Image (tube, rainbow, N blue to C red):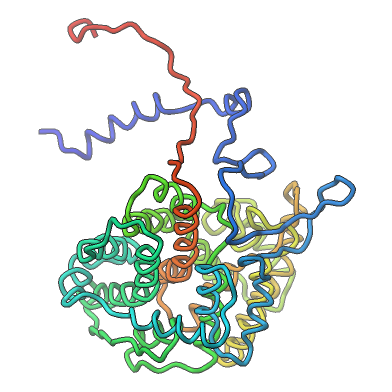
Length: 448
């Protein structure tokens, strides 16, 4: 009997033959592939008050690249970080801003934090019965399974009133670190043969502090470690609405589905390598560069190897210098600019100065190498993921948790967009596709 592997190998050729669409037809019919035109301009699919990305400015009717800006509810994210100095942690303040649309005063923030940390609990035996079952290195899938299962414990799962959806959102924001870390520990214990640690979160700690507490066997961390992770989470919290997982959130929300299904769909989008795995690719690339560059101070040696990567002669032979450039930003990514100072502080504390020199040199050299070999329509600069993987590595966070950490931050943005979609419109999102089907005469089975 033919096994399924051999059958699908043969039948896949039919898929490849009958599913291919001539790329020229996109231009002929004016269809924007990936909802983007040839210049990368996105098709407008909605309106939002939640955030904005600025990468260009217009003067006298002309479009010019400019330093990037990221606004949360109209506030520059760099100002939010600066305003948080001395107040220790700001992820929760950013969450309040995105969910409610206003900056909180001290009392409002404390009340929000009390309610948020009060939600840091899972149903009885949920960790044992759900998270610990079928452990896997794919923590994003493990989290998605847990998110959907949480819906089974919620008697108001299908209630779409704003207050109920907000309650569900806050509970998921609070429990995401627990689900991610517990799933990782289950994998380490049951699959890799390591010890099992299940720590409980502390209600008086921030999301960033609790993540490190839950992850580490001794539950210890420094002030700077938690502060840098807190900044990383804030900067990954939201990004303009025009990204794949946020669009997925709004599409599924528009169908009238429940919060758990919506967030599970967003998780499935984020785990894709083209979306949430950027910092992991940077780290893999940096591992490769370290093997082939002997002197981190030698700019010529670094430039020569970056040229090899760009020419598909090294690393994964895709011709990409990961962490350089962005789909939207032109001259600079504001998240990278605000983050780098904290990265340097952490590198000094962790005695990773040599690695920091390599990162600095690549940041300086890569745009020049790319400009020499590629036609550039807008600026090339490092994006936030160029450094975020380095930070996670210095914090001792395993690579299996890099994309889940992205989700721990982005759940806030998804929740804000879900609420906005529910409040604003009751229309289901139904995109149109140009059909290329031609009518065919039916042939009876005996004559085929």
